[in-house]
Length: 491
Ligand SMILES: [Zn+2]
Image (cartoon, rainbow, N blue to C red):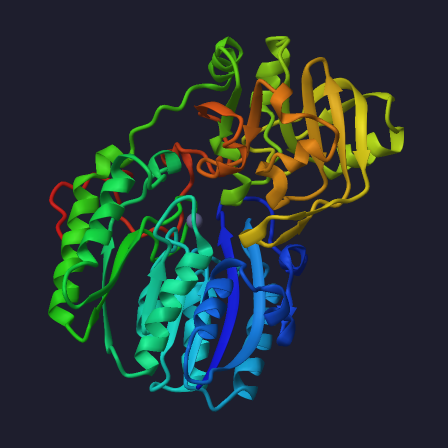
């Protein structure tokens, strides 16, 4: 069996002012050919696929093409996507003839001239391999499912959990592919778009309406003939023509069953729509006050409007401003992506006192810089973090600025480590000494789990803010809940 595999994945925040370029993919490791086999064992959906491929009794010839993971960021530059697709198509052609294709895509990527990147990749794949070769895709469940994707893929398998377990999704999709290739199953796909969007406040699958919806998917997979049920609550900052939630169902050659399950799943999400919009978020000043008043242990301040994991720039200042205005006296950890500040702090050197205008530079619509005077407490010239199943990430140059009891970790780029304790420990801080930490995510608090005592969702403005009604939507199909009144929708 000859199987080509590739990863072309990025999560686009349409409202972010930063354009994603080739360097954003290189920061996470842009690999071609056999280097993918060396680097991706155990990492992401590709790692999961490789595990399952290794378990096959009959010989599998692996044809690695490209691994391009860009994290979350702004719209992808046209020439960057063109470059990736050209390399991918070229590699695919050179690996013909093929028995199957495994792709790891995000599902919510948009470039400057292509608002359905995954549909584009899948159409290119289908054009090269022809109609008979199975194409199975592992997706992030925050994907936006489009007609082009459904037409060109045999299976679109999404994550089962938030926070995600990317290798598990890779294994689930890979098992479908190998069962297809052995002739054990004939997957039939049916899908249903759901005219709604929702903020990230209820996106965790461990509780609330998302748990209810995803639990239903798992229950339906127990029905005879159902192979996979993938709910897709689209990430809420993707302003594209086919945007909105969806569900994709795969059965073993039973289109009616697939259709029935898709309808039931879609109607379930619709029935929970108001619940998906419930929120416990509080204004920045109240959030800081609550964190100060909390008894002991680490309080997580989720900067929902500036989620780097959702594609935001990571330089919002509203929570930091509240800390400084309230002159807090307990230790607070603050990440700030500001290359100019990193440069100034490291040029001044450890022990120097500096006054700088911090943050609010990339995103100057929702945020403004805040002037701080502090002492440079540490400088690092580069640090490589092994994030295990999320791969390796280079922190590059960082600096620590101390303003009273507020410790600001300055980064020169949007690193995945922005929400990881190593950002602070590699600069000499002890996590156990901190009373609060700002995280640039609304869901991925797991790296701080060991110290976490509480979580406060901050209603911070920004390009990933929960108030989706405040964005200037240009492309989203209308009507859509809750931007428009829809009274009688049914799948
Ligand atoms: Zn996701």
